[in-house]
Image 1 (cartoon, rainbow, N blue to C red):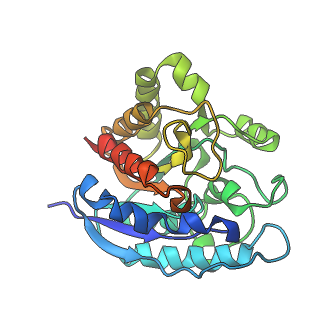
Image 2: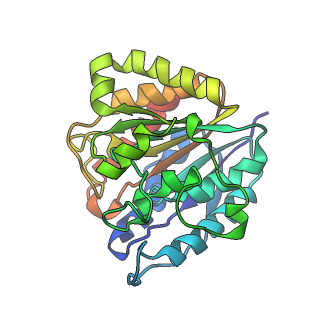
Length: 287
């Protein structure tokens, strides 16, 4: 019988984003365990509370490095055939990927669903925000991290990356994507081509270029008219049904091993409506 496990990673890399750190707890309260089939709940990776930001760029880099190593150790210590990861901000993906890489044979492909590129480096980032660099870091770009994580980088080959839902790329990110073998499906392209046809093409790309699939969802990939409790609400996003269709297509490859949900800000969701919609999105993605 296949085993599945859920791991929380309540990490945020800027002090003002503490609300994202509350995401894993809130989503558990809204029923995400039942929505994903009641896996073993392995608890949360221990990450330090961030009360003030450090000087320098990238911002709070050492905090990110230490927390990434903690997330890697936590995930690597959970024996499972498939994983559900609850963030925190998008950058938890670096530790999660490093934690599962030794578990599965072959190379991964990554479905990265996000309104933003997350493909900056310290040299190109206009803000110095680590959360805007994490996909690039997973691909081996950017600064050195911990020895354990660096020994595994690139965590995913760029040709195995499919980025879906973007509508707010920084110019350096757009240039980096244009020069990369990573595949980019903007939100507008998905709507123009159609979600069903886009999902078929995405799933073919993932299946052809990887032995197993890591699916990352930043909930701001969904239009803020549906899920507003995010830090960077950007109009023109996918509908929740379009997002669910794309994730279902990744699952239908038979290669999906990790589903990661990030960037829900519980402090911006006092009534819980967005959190319940995130849980419903996940449930529909797996149905």
